[in-house]
Image (cartoon, rainbow, N blue to C red):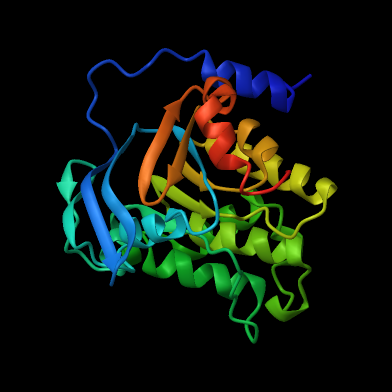
Length: 261
């Protein structure tokens, strides 16, 4: 029998730590402010190749702003962002995507007048390596990985919320990312749907794609990630083993403001 979600999570956490390999992603003293509001304040963060990092924190803590900075949707006020040993701080979102950095959004925004396959084909066409590969094959593989292959010819407007979330994943996956940023992708789903989404994300992880996942549904994160970071007021409050981080008194105090999950 294939391993269960719990068994696969335990196997990933049992992998030996990287020995001297350069990080895939590195944020070096990244800062960003909107007037007096600081959404990133000397933010330092690293992610290894193939690693999965979970991000939690109160609303307004700067989590989505961090994704916007990493993806290039926002420009930093200070500091640097490095991806695959290259300084990408000044590069456009499209260039970062072609380099292998993809993201999903909290609210899925498919091209509703296009089919599921056409939506994913957009990602495959404009993602990493572009026209040098078979975009149709890449799109088909992404649909298969996310469980949407049977709905390829449906209009995106007809999809349920869960399938729209899967379409967000498929479109990002079709860009052939080395790092995938997931922004509260489980939000609004039922518990059954969350479990189905977890299985999909684990399947993506098993392909070697690194993940950073922002999520308020903590048990979903703990089923997938190797490491957990808590962000508050634009800073990393704590990071490390997920169980130890969640047991921290300081983290519990900060996280009480989120509400019971």
